[in-house]
Structures are given as structure tokens and as C-alpha cells.
Image (cartoon, rainbow, N blue to C red; front, side, top):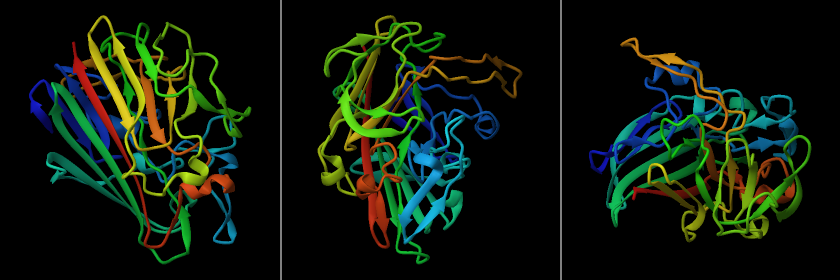
Length: 342
């Protein structure tokens, strides 16, 4: 899909409705594999995937007091006893229907659809997920709008949980081995304090390893190492609607690199976002059908920026209102990515 400029284009795949290419001025600013087959065999790190049925971690891989019972989810969070990114085969590992060409909000776009059955990865209820990608040019900048909708369409139970985001790893210095030299500005310096198992303690506090919100900082070869959920809206547990798409867009993050002049700005209707500097990232070497070897990429070779609700809102009952989905209801979210070269 083109943003009306051949040097600014996108490629999406049906597996996980994932983003394979996000090209700006001829540069792909997302880490990717050259061929679709490798996403099925080599993508343990969720490159470009649509994450669901829930995002991030669920404490202890359990949903307690949902439909009057407890649901056991997949435990797939390394040494931590949690469920991560929807389970061992979350939505990023599933084949969506699509891409189907659409015109949405006056822009060229594509739609993907996935029907997640009751019991998949332990989650109750059948839900339908729709993903829309639309592209355009605004004031010389390439714009990608991503919209998510989840509807509870089954009749197996009264309620379930939902959450969707994208797990692209961005690199605005394409071809470089790491993100060193990337300039970052975050829209907030508030974050969810974590326990030893990467689960929020419930406290929202200032992230002391970076400057105050709105102040730029530069990523080094090894520091700062960040894998945390930053909070844009500290009132979200009581104020966040199930469908945030009608809320104003708020600044998530801006990243750029002086060596390339490439910039990426992210806004979202979501109340939080995970910011991960890829310190555990490893993308294995692959070989194209023409015999060209694509070398492996290691730690800090990309930055994941994932707009979302709070971590463990599905498992934490006082936060569950952000993601509890009942029959006939819609969960929704929207994020906008603007990229350009100076």
C-alpha cells in the first residue's frame, strides 16, 4: 500500500495483520524479515505483529472472578509465571482474513479480520477483531493510521477481556546494528512501578532514568535500558472508556536519528504505552529464496513502542474496566504514526 509516494509505502501480511514494511524516503524503519515464511518460523520476538487477545502481561497467567470463575492462560513469559502478549499462539501468530482494500476516512487502506474462538489460549468467549491500516500524506509527512475494534460476538459466556496493539520494532537509522544515537522524546515520565515478575505493584510514579516529559534524550549503546509501561492518563482505571477511538490523540513518543534525518512521531487514544529498547532482542539470520543472507540482528537493534491500556488490567480487578468486554460491546483504539525525512 502506498502513501501516494513510491518512496513511502507499506507492506502488511495476513499473519498477525503485521507490518512488514514502513518505508520513508526509501528506508524501511521497522525491523522485518524479507519473506513471509520466516514470520511463522523465526519470529519469537513479535516483529510487527498485532498483539491480542490481550496486550503485555497477565499476572500469574490467570483471570480470576470473570464469569464467576478463574481461567488459566498460557504461561509464556520466560522465567516469569505470567501470560505474555495473548499467549503462546496469540493473535500475532494467527492468520487473519485480508488484506481487503478499503477507503476509510477518505484514505486508501486495508482491513484485516480475525475470529478468535471461545477457549483460544484459555480466554473465554468468541470475539471478532478488525484491524484497519490507512495511509496518506499530510504536510509532507507520511501518515499511517491504525485502528482496532474487538466485538464480543459469541454467546458462550457473559464477559471476556480484550486489548490490542502493534509490536513493530522501529529503527530510524536503518542498517545500523543498534539504536545508539536515536533521539527520543516521550509524552510522559510517569510509569507503572513493577515487581520482580514485571507486574505492576499498583503505584504510578516518575521514571527517574530519563529527563522530564517533553525533554529529549539520546539512547546510547547500552543505556538507558527501558522495558516499562508509561502512563499518559493516570485516571484511566476510572475514566477510560472501553472504546477510546473518539478520544483526542495524545503524544506517545517521537524518535529521530541525526545520521539519517528520519523522524517518527506516534500519537494514540490509549492511556499508556510500553517503551522497550530491545535489550533482549535477537532476530536470527535468514536466507532469501535467491540465496541472499540477511544477517542476524541483536540486542538494541530496534525500539518497540506499544500504545495500550495498563499492564495486567485484564488480571487486576480494579483495573479490569479498561478491558472487560461484554456481549454486543466494542473495544476500540486508534494510533497515528507520522514519519518524515529532513
